Every structure is written in C-alpha cells, then in structure tokens.
Length: 167
Image 1 (cartoon, one colour):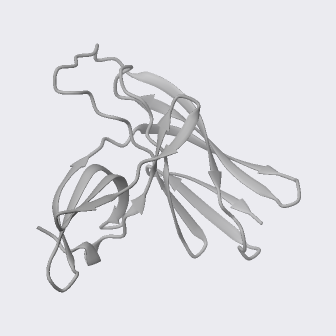
Image 2: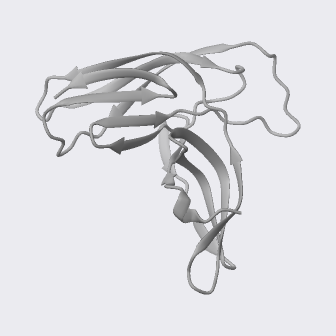
C-alpha cells in the first residue's frame, strides 16, 4: 500500500465513440473509486484503471488497488501550431497498439515548467476476450493547453518520444 501523497493522479476522460464522457470518481464506504488516472512514477508516465483509495479517520488516502494499463508504442510526435488567435498547439502522434482489439484511452497530459509529458495508453481485454497478436497502427491528435504560458522553447514527451516547439 502506498500513500496517495507519493503520486499525482490526473482524472481522465473516457472516450465513447465520438463523444467524450466524464467517468466520475465515486466515494462510498470510505473507498474512493477512480475509473482512470495517470501518474508520473520515478520520472516516467504511468496509466491506471480501476483505482481504489481508502480513507482513514484523518482524511488521508492509501492506495488499495489499481490496474496498470499498457502504454502504446509511439513512433513519432509532430507538433502543429495553428496561427490563430489564440494560438493553438496540438500533437499528431502515430505508433502501434499491441493488438487490434483494444482502443486508445484518453491521453493524460502533465506540464512542469517548459515541459509536457503525455501518457497514452490502451484499453485492456476482458478476461474472456481473445485477439490476434499483431501490432495495430494508430494516429491520433492531442491538444495541448497553452493558456497563460510564457514565450519560450517547450519540450513534449509522449511515452518517451520527444518533440519541441516555440511560443
């Protein structure tokens, strides 16, 4: 069991078809259930599903359980800057899922100073599901929130593959 203070969890959104729906965290019987979250653990991004935290009488949370999702294999990250007002920055990410029967999960984006770290994971197969073991290429766009950022050079890392851009 680990104290929550060791991790920074970001609640994520679940993608359902073309619509993005929030999957709310639920607190019941002193247990906080969080459907999806991401953390930077030892400097590396990690993505989790079915996170359970238990609350003690002092209001502190301890991690009970979490299922770690596989991060997808990323081949390239291209930064696109739309010269509009306000300026918009997005990433075109391409790579491979481990099998064709899984989907991409919503990306978790962390920002620290002049750097962005993105965790991009895939869903898991259910216990009774099987799938052919072949890589499945993907391409997706990820918007970066640059609201209020200073001018300068920024780096982006998506599952370890880096790119940079200037504002």
